[in-house]
Image (cartoon, rainbow, N blue to C red; front, top):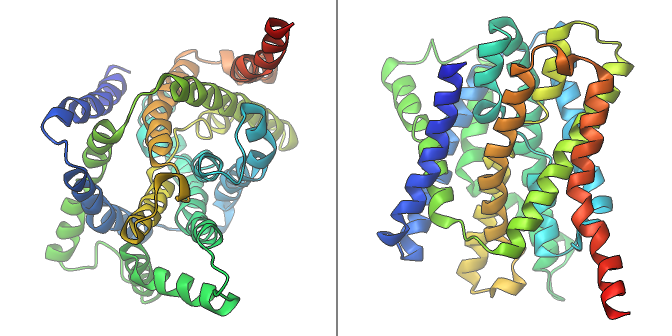
Length: 364
């Protein structure tokens, strides 16, 4: 328990370190340099190691399928609940939230606590489930991001063939896609991390170790606190947590899960914080639009909102996951989960549902 809390504290302190460095690194080019290291070196190395370690068993396929089901549940629901928060789904904010909210980062926000409270076997099942989330965040959301980019930057002269060529060219150029293709080829030939030369495997391991600290420091460097957006982000994340618990209750009932550890796994893994991977797709597109000289209001995504989501999602998810697991069997009952889910959903919606009647009353 103490070790898991310490790990979480370290993650939050790294964000604080980045925030403290803002006085030293003010130039946008320098901040983009940190982002480029993440996108071109740290992230591809992390993805390569993750893919090379995948061992899929047919009997365990249900776990990635369930997590993938959650990803699509949030993704398909977003166009319907975003307007409640005053966000147009086709705006830069709407597109940003549609990308980030369905993604999960269990490695940062839930795996340490699952290992601490539920043990190695539960952690292995959670890691297997994360395979579905990886596929969703790395592949599906990349295509979604490119589709949003092409739609937002379409011109009258651009035809469907041009859009397809642009998409394929972007796919080929991205370091993360090159490294994914390389990993798949290696796996097809039966090559894994253990069978690779020590120099190569160690190179990827060292580059991957940069990922978490650089991402968190970058969040601290790039985040801009604006009161209106902080309230918005907090409400949306509370709502996301609420409907996530309701989704977990549905899954527990459909599959008639009675094992306490499996119930808690079904609850805490979907409560994980938003992932950096869709943010990487957003950042890559933002760089393309910077090169084109597009103004902020014409860009496909809202980078500041994306950074805020990542910055607030991590501590909120960590608190929820740690609290649920530390409570023992209290949250292993669907009635408790249902009530908690409804409370969190209500807390997220309340400020926005009450706002309009309040203004009408004020005008009256």
